[in-house]
Image 1 (tube, rainbow, N blue to C red):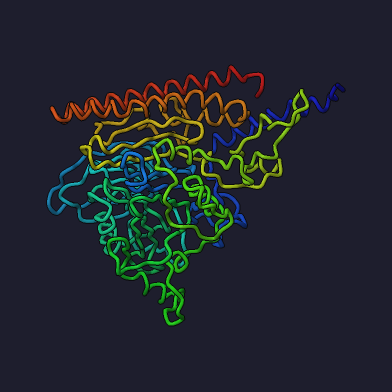
Image 2 (cartoon, rainbow, N blue to C red; image 1 turned 30 degrees about the horizontal axis):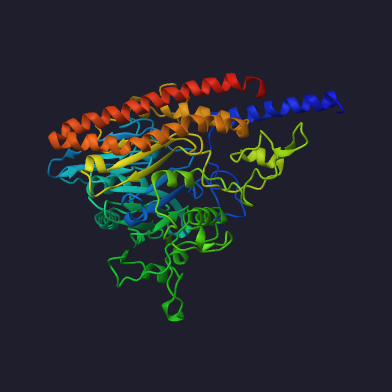
Length: 546
């Protein structure tokens, strides 16, 4: 075999170094991978992007009806992919409040550096209720003590709808409904009342609600510049179906004569008429997503196609369609591991796999995927290699992924369960946190967004993920060998743990709380330490290949 030239060898040696420099720079200054946070992309919506634009390329949510899951759980989920949101996650207790007291609303709570951050900026006050419920608080709050859970994606909407008249943004609306509602229908009613009186001032959002009995798809937008309130629509997902939201409005037709399955704000039709976006005299059917937004984003539609196709391949959906069913009946009932598989997907073995052309010839003359081929490349690396970007479901900018289970046959403290994983779902384990526990691990309360800290669990997972992107084809399997057996063991022993918790609960609920807290918190501490060790091992094991 002919020996390579000295310049060639030098260039080959510089490529991994170049990758490492890019990696470290990206790690120190994380940014949203979405077009709202970098340059506009022709595949995204037609809105002109500015610093005030929403990140409409930053989240994915799956919503599962009780008859679509193997065990009867309802499920919702949220891959928080913004790349800028806070990393700390806490439990906020149930609280009683004096008559006449006021509740403070905060400006951009998802940017705070710790629970009850002293530097929070008040946005206003509203009357407080007599009692607020315990809930798990993240950048977007997740679940309350009644097993009411919420997933999220930012959906943008028409720019003219966003208003500064009002004091409630999306994360605060999440918090308020989890503090005050016991089920999904009540959450929608409370959201309507609060935004009517105090105003919704954020971009369009999709809330995917799940309680132990029902799941609802709820889309809300501002009421228009200078107005106070909101415009919204909600659809109950059939019990045997699964829905997906991927940063684009999806609700089309509304049958408001069927309140068991459809709800909407009082102005749902009139606002569209006032804005000149829909004229009933034209005979055109009112479609919520087109009245108040658009369906232009291929980044969103591709994720919708992929998720629904993985759930129901028998439908043979077209990857380039403009619209898909809001929800589908899966070909087989799903489990939490099934949802995790979807959230880890990067279009492998499809025409949209960004690594499909990144091949090399090995010593045996075989064409193989390059060890450097990485589905989570930075924008600079894609430009260098001439790779067109696809917004895959798995995201390298993920802050966390939550998948919830709400189960009517179990007491709320045991039935409400949040599976949490930090950073990219494709590279990290997801651990169980019951809503009945008394505290989160200390390392989950330390925000890692602004600086590196070994006290922050998020950085344990973030560091290992980022290292793996340097030689992903070789290093991702090492990570999988670490997270896969952890998850398999947790799912295998879930029924046993919950049976033990139920026995203790029937004796004394405090015993179940202590047992579940020790289980969840101890597991999280142990796994975070394992990931710190794994990151150290990656440096050593692949030292000569960086």
